[in-house]
Image (cartoon, rainbow, N blue to C red):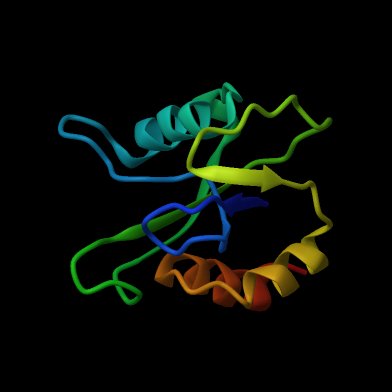
Length: 117
């Protein structure tokens, strides 16, 4: 779990790497790019799986949720957007996500609360 810095949107909130899909990108390509930009972690597209997408949580965006399994904890180099990170068990991650203000993290919380066990 990442925690936003004094970022203009939702300062100090729990967060995941993410952002806007750029022109000409597919959502999975944006995910790979954003994870590198925000954490320094390189992902293989073949290792990620889209588990959910919804427009319910935003009036003008479609949100995507991807998951992957890590066999180890890769080195993380967070960007200016975040002040810290921590590796958490799924149950603690879900609990921490419940306090977020961002609509995307509400989607993550609801999805994982129903499907994360």
